[in-house]
Length: 137
Image (cartoon, rainbow, N blue to C red; front, side, top):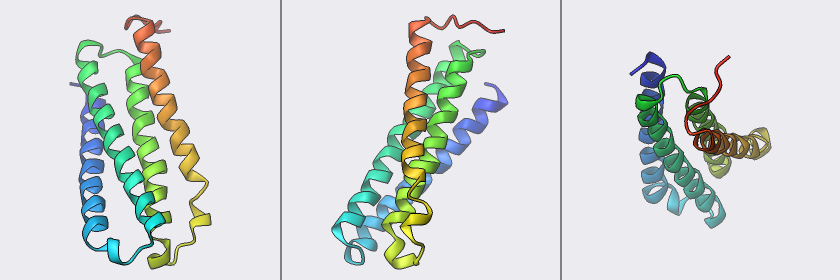
């Protein structure tokens, strides 16, 4: 496995660890300190984090049979950027009443993260449509 995919797995594993931590923190500590809508935003961030951590790990597995695929590489990067922007911003927004960080400082990042997720799925779709035979120039 290439260094790139080893790093991708390491970052995905780190995000997975953060997801478990935020999920547990929300379920045990924050549930009595946050309003329902803030807890729901936190849960959404955790859910999308885990979905895309698993998708990123799937890209690393796909790379074993298609090591030169720029589409698989791109999908993995888009998924991790999406986790950082989408889930990260939801974590900040959902805890803004406790941290004092205004949601307006990071609110614009949430849709950018969503677009990054979509780009990752489009890259995977294109990889599939092309049958793993993308043109490399």
